[in-house]
Length: 126
Image 1 (cartoon, rainbow, N blue to C red):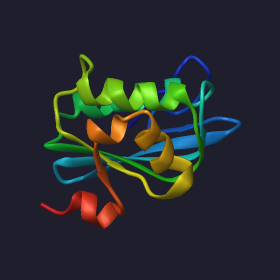
Image 2 (image 1 turned 135 degrees about the horizontal axis):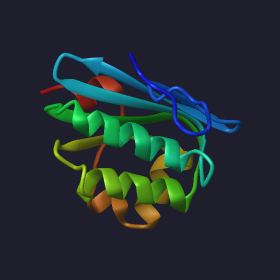
Image 3 (image 1 turned 135 degrees about the vertical axis):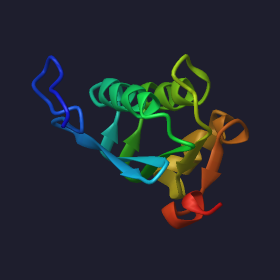
């Protein structure tokens, strides 16, 4: 059972005024579902859940951005942190398609560094 962060949000399902991040564990894979604007307000919640996911020692971490309505630089920074930061114990796959999420990753050349998948089912495939 998850605790609560300093804002009172559940660490299993961090919701903010502009969006939410939820953690789903599937066998040895952890999926973080992000909905809403992944900006300065939601990025710390993504970081906390990514760190929590790392403590679960998954064989794979997937961050699903299909529900994201805006991807800010703060959100992209958290993707990089999850990929190569201190808690990056498992390979990271990012689900991103279209102009809202994939285009900013391409423009910043993060698409060259991150493993990007067009759908959750493809990201979960071996």
